Image 1 (cartoon, helix red, strand yellow):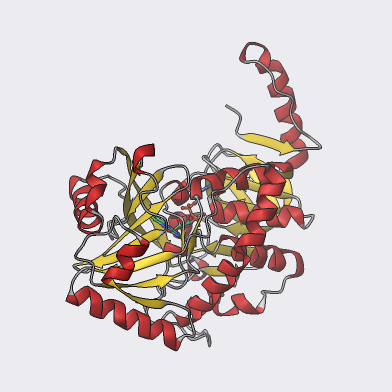
Image 2 (cartoon, helix red, strand yellow):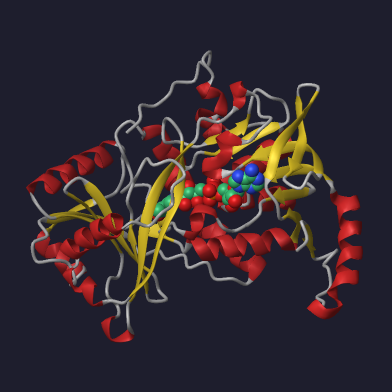
Length: 422
Ligand SMILES: Cc1cc2nc3c(=O)[nH]c(=O)nc-3n(C[C@H](O)[C@H](O)[C@H](O)COP(=O)(O)OP(=O)(O)OC[C@H]3O[C@@H](n4cnc5c(N)ncnc54)[C@H](O)[C@@H]3O)c2cc1C
């Protein structure tokens, strides 16, 4: 397996069979490495955030490389893909709300451009969301959320239990009321990641299938990275987009190291057989005894049930307790769910920051940018992140909408106000 790979329409490496590959690949790889070891932008991390950054930067004419042992993997393999600016609103996160809404507004055009560039359907569904309450406590929680949404000028409609069941007949008879939010949609994060990977390749992004071991700093400026195999890559600008591992890259000075931590989430995937379809027509979610549960129905018959939220470091074990909790709560919400085949259980890590908001743009170390800390909204924030990072990489100016999310807000002397954690 090569550690570097070039995928540009202009320098596409011809397909070769395994039997005659060695010589041809070795020659091509050596050429690619010597030509392309240096770039304008080196993105460390090829999850959806690193990929969208690379795609957008390459489209602006920057020679861009991505280093990741498994590009297109990461948390997007696990994520449900809710684009839930309104139903994910929490107290103290009003500034983040503005960013989330701005990204949600960009989604239709972003998807159209990505699908046109790749020919891939990313499973974007403008289906809306229904947040429901099962008991009096849940109902008062939802009433408070509704009041907060109204104060923030958002559109959501209070429905009785009967009205909820009219919209979604599979809901439990005990549903006591709910909020209809027609603006919270969904996308399939796996398809999104695959399309971004292809879009990057078509835009000429160079991939290095390796871990970055350390950041290279020369005369107080980020200059590239050293890969796990010892290979050195140079770049004028480096973007650290390594998800929940962003705070662990060697060589990054302590004062600019992002305060990002992993928050584990377990999800289940079920399949809705044809006779049961459509099982649900929109995303259905609830808080059941204090735990969030959601069911996201995809057009292809997949039903994603999520998600636990666990502060357990880098552990990604799927546990009996996690699966039980999700099935128990989802079953209370939609009893017919137990008839469906369970096809997959998975756990992933959300990259969380101290104020639950992303870190975007330049750090105090010249040449080093961050695009990380997207926590539970990384899929939603993908279009906006790509635009913001491409703008800052090409012009050096952080767009206005991203200024509250500068990594510098975590420096002790920062004048930027921090929001309270939810
Ligand atoms: C259970 C769950 C449900 C979610 N549901 C939603 C949802 O409904 N809606 C939503 O908007 N968001 C959701 N999210 C959040 C979203 O998935 C994440 O915010 C987003 O995927 C983060 O993307 P990322 O590229 O920043 O990080 P990651 O996906 O973690 O990618 C980081 C990449 O960096 C690479 N990497 C790490 N270290 C190095 C290194 N040293 N060198 C090279 N590469 C490195 C990794 O291999 C990885 O590919 C969910 C997340 C989880 C876990």
